[in-house]
Length: 425
Image 1: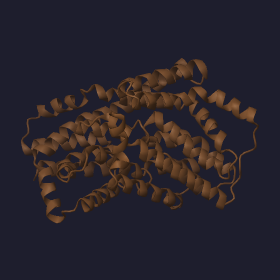
Image 2: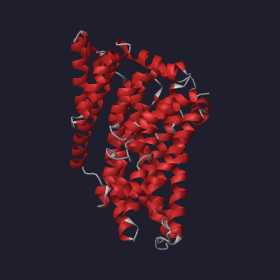
Image 3: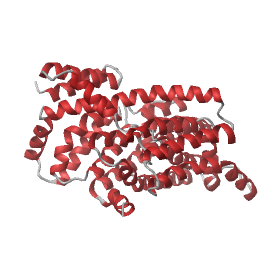
Image 4: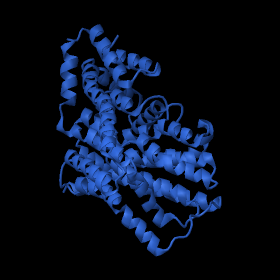
């Protein structure tokens, strides 16, 4: 059997059995190498090569910044988002969307966004008479903005496999992310007006100014991160380091929500999270080496091109494959498994790798809210104490908006490529 196919089969079996993804891909790669007669030292060499990149330093630093921000600073972002939206009907849902977007500009993780923002807004929405399924759906779907708005851990993993510029990938996802945020906000405002949901208590201009003054240090965080990256002032890794340092200073000395002991615990939790991700990134290089050496990408490309000759249809088939896998598997696993397989096909049809990266990641972000795996939806249902079926039904309007964004990314290349081309000049 082809070594690349062995990796796919073993990986799928182990993943469905519940083994951690980094262990699944490591075992699958080892089994394929043994069966095909690859030198086993290659797995160590390729794994080290996969992790030996300065650009990957941004992963632990962005995760650390997000973990620190989740300790009280997120409340400041929610309070600031409530200032312009508090007097509209259903404002808590709109605040959830905007707060998720602001938090996403720091964390890069859908699950972290759902837990940090949804953990505060879902109970508040339930207390104010919102339908609990809608509250869960709003928080779960808004968490997609976490990784969609730069920075994104998934895009960094994609970049490590394709050697695309992380900075250009972050620029390319900005317009789809802003468009999705605006559409989510428009739907929450429409739903709030239709269902006559309650407004927040009226506040004076002085009170609003006091809230903004208190939140200013938290609001500077996403501005600093995105400004440094988009302005080309420093590399993505340097921006990540600045964000981690800034969040620690603000949390410990300005807002005083983070103690030295809490910081040590946060560093410990971040180390564990990062270790799993970095092992996954390293092993993905080893698995990609086996897949490519087995000629499986060429076989896949020849099969696909024999079936279809239209770029439109190819993009549609890629999206369908990713959407199905997104219902069943963890996002980074999909990237590691499918991207090396599809690169030849993508290149043969002239699809830009930056565009393909955004398309890939938006598909897996949508997977975060689609059962049965849908991790963000599962987090939301726990927060709202509701069923997955009921919550997903309320997710459908947000799901439809996400599909529109996906179609724009797929069939309007300038939707993703215009901003990188302008800022690169």
